[in-house]
Structures are given as C-alpha cells and as structure tokens.
Length: 162
Image (cartoon, rainbow, N blue to C red; front, side, top):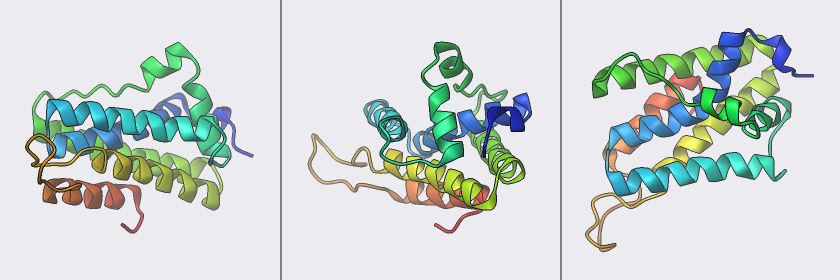
C-alpha cells in the first residue's frame, strides 16, 4: 500500500510536480501563448480524470488527492533555477528522472510503472491539445516534430518506451 509517508518530503514534491513538469516540457518544446493555454487545460483534465475515479492506482490516486488542497496545488507548481529555455528543459528532464526514481524506490513495481505511464500520458495529452502551425484552424499538425522529440525525451527520462 502506497502512502505519502513512504516518501521523503522532497521526493513527494517531485512526484506531485512531475505531471506539470511533463506538460511544461511540451510547452517549452513549441511555445505559443494560445497553445499553452490548451495544453494546460489538457493537463488539468487528465488529472481530473483520476479524481473522478476514471483511472489511477494507489500512488496516482494519492497524488491526485493532493490537488484537492490549495497549498498542495501551489507546491505542485515547479520552480526552476534557470531562466533560459535550454536550462529549464534540462532541469525539467532531471526532475522527471528523479520523480521516476522516487516512484520506483517508494512503491511497488506495478504502481511505479503506472505512475510513470500516467505522467507520460499527461505529456501526450498536452502535445495533442492544440494544432501546431495552423492559421485560424486551417492546416497544421496535431503534434509537431519538436513536440515528438519532447515526448521522446520525457519517455527516456521516465524510463518508459514511447
């Protein structure tokens, strides 16, 4: 059985930040104001799906329960030291690697695998949230090359197959 107390305070913070970090990494891969709003909504929707009981094992459900508390929501917002795009991307991937490692060391293999896949699924939802390169909704692609590369980076950081 997974419990928050199984993890250090820092590891738990990483675990609850990872969904936002994965979505943010997608946004950083192909930045656009309008698209970033859609991507943020997709992240929130995937988290809400678990809260509605549509999916989620013990660890994922316990993390989602944290989002019901305002102070936990604030702590789920990642803070990066770097202010440049490449530095933020590097920090994001390091945080995702650390979160995956924390999940693996603090819970069973199946629960950790489900957590890593859930974080990756959130990144996929963010990548699919808006068409890239369109003009007034005409043309464009659902996931551009930069986002595909970002998804591969995220999968690698989480230790899963894309």
